[in-house]
Image (cartoon, rainbow, N blue to C red; front, side, top):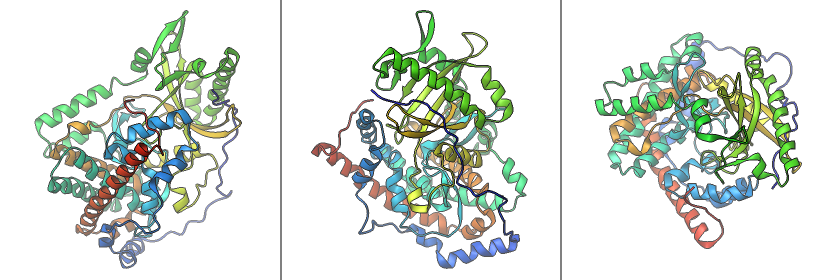
Length: 485
């Protein structure tokens, strides 16, 4: 089997050289800009959704993505998407981006997550070892219409509520509460000073205090247990779970097709040795994208082993590696993940990224939207054994990472979680978008909230139709799906 020969190339930006001229508007002018956008795109207009007559075939869009992925992993991706309409939605970012391109736009942009469904939020550790809540997936990040992120997030809650069997009125309350929180936080951020917006973050300990009145003691206890579990998900936990000793050497355990060590992917020992050498080169060259002090820290670790790992739902089939490094001794591990970064699903609808390297696009977007980011977050460009050039971004595999237990949520708990995600998304958008204009557009009333709740219902119906179409495509043999992994 062929895979990556990691030959580095400088990931230069498409951005023009020289200082960028900035036209600065007064707060009053920015507020007027947002208010005027209501005339071009009424807030109630966001509630409408119906498929265009020229809507692309969703199966064809999935097949298009499959063409650039590892062929033997594509059936696994379809299998994961077919578990339920909710898991299908997680892998349908391109389908929804295509649909959103035909919807109303306010004309106000921000850096987008691009895939802001509820499962792409979670907890992780800051460099100061505080547990933070934030967006945690940026594969599709790109500047674009801020409302696209809001719509994808809202629809994900409607679809999750259906998956949990919630009544329609409970689902609407969940969705509308999250959008209202987004709007309220954006209004607060519009009145804040620039530095205060940049420093804003959501610590889990403070979040529990804010939500104390909206969750039961039982729900809070369950959430605190999940947080305690997240603190154990680090390199040491991965070290004990994912590795063993073979002939005196620490190696990543094989668990095909989910985890496959490099030597099992190559057809000869010389090929696997060559690939290991290329991983050495990747680590040496990727470190130039880190801050100086973090380069120094990375240099204190030595590369030991690597394996290909299947991750997520939407990302299945893209090339992702886990890299084991050791520090002062054999009990001082660092796990890095090198994940392929392809073109954002948004690019064909809002324009190409200014970055030539999609790994750099991901890293730049993550650093802009997250309050704090992984200290080892960086990027690289490589050439594979097949001669294909690919972009990667690198981060820690685990660093106190955790996610909400959606399958155990009741309506009140999902409402609280929806508010958390709405508040987080508003803070992320406020760092790059015109928060004053967006807040002015949203206003103090609930017109936008109700419209997005209407959109979420209509789009959840569309998602179910698309899910059924994929089910039929598998039954007909057009698509091959591997279930249960």
